[in-house]
Image (cartoon, rainbow, N blue to C red; front, top):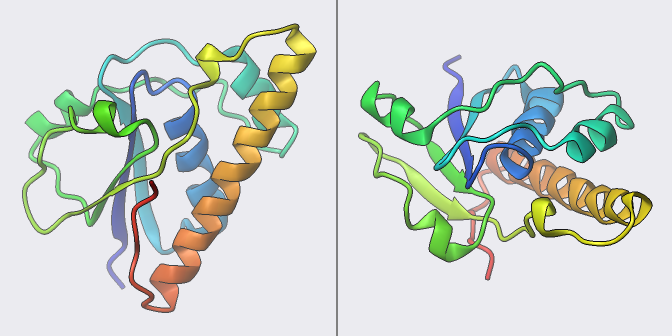
Length: 151
């Protein structure tokens, strides 16, 4: 069976898209071929790395990738899912082929303020929300339920 190709995109590919990619690999790697990328690739968010380890997922050696480099490779995806705000997601190039574009609205953990513990708690909530959204995505695909955008 051919795998369903999914691209998760956010601004820096340092947090939200990395978490979404990791959860899709964890829960349905046999069904999906998944990658994540960003518009302005940065460095992995260390707090995100820490909260993902709490779930038994080590993303510490992941590299951030450019969505535009992927575009130049003429890669085709069944789904391109932006996990950032709508304005940022509109910067995503249109990939060739039949691609369903979705936008999942999640806060950027790089904007979280407070003590380290407060940032960890906010990032855990974000992580759990992304995990739940990925599980819903898998369920909807497996059961042929139409997908809707957030917001």
